[in-house]
Length: 145
Image (cartoon, rainbow, N blue to C red; front, side, top):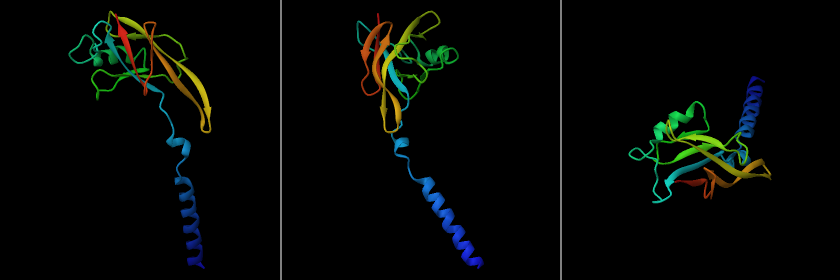
């Protein structure tokens, strides 16, 4: 009798674990609410963000982290910043500090799309100081005069 109860308990536990471990198809399709961007000089087309460029990404991250936590710098790529747009309205202008004296604005335009796993934001455009560029593969480029 004890062996039968033990086998039954093991069978129940295996069934529960198997049911819980199935991958949720929607979980695999989750799209993080980030867009990656850099800022280039309008005249040359070259990035002005970098360790040895006009604006240091570490400085930008530190200037924006407390007041504007939606911007961060991922040190893997020197000139690329990340904008987390969770909670940011479409077409909302956000302050963006390049230095202690240089304040710009950034923003995104998106539409809300429904699909089988819920609602997500379809990115359309990136704004940098009122200039609009398209977003390609979650990456955008802003140009500074």
